[in-house]
Image (cartoon, rainbow, N blue to C red):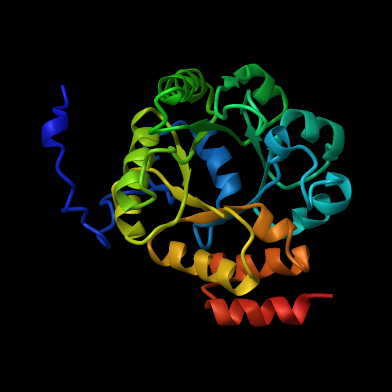
Length: 290
């Protein structure tokens, strides 16, 4: 058992040293089954190994927030410019055309809203996700929240047990614990907990020392976009994360609340896939906008 009086900070992460002997291009999945690999390969660009994900699942917590009033008008036009779209089952069924070629990451847990205590969630049935042809199922872990940590870890652990034999990847999303410092130690702990409990992908927040978060996580890490930032700052966030070893971004507000969402999606893709600097990404944004 862990001794709380003797938890020592890790200091030998082997940052910059790749895992040896990997034949499959997505970290940590050499031994996965064909179906799971195929779904992951649909989500991650085979040339860059990275992914630009567009999150539009905010409505299950926030309702019709700015930029998501009409998903058919505001989100669907962005589909050609991203690798994955992440939404909830009701919105996907009612709004996303069945012939949409952009892979779907399905937000698979729901419960409370911003009007009450957050994160008291349940998880949808995996058979429903399979019937929707989802490429992965995304669930949240509230590591550091004494009221919901155990429940959300159980949600992911149980889902991973059911999903893995059926070839369905699971994305663990690290919520921010109220009592935890937002630093590399916390996000490194939360990301590792996701992976240890069966997550195939981890979505977490960028922070200083992020290279340690990535190095300590045996599966791919993508960053959350978080609150709306000026375009250059959002591109800088993407660039720093990729430079630290993240394999993509899962942005929502920093794309769909942009002055020109389509231009911003393409600028982010330039940074994530083509190695553009933030300044070059902003130049691309300005060239495309309007």
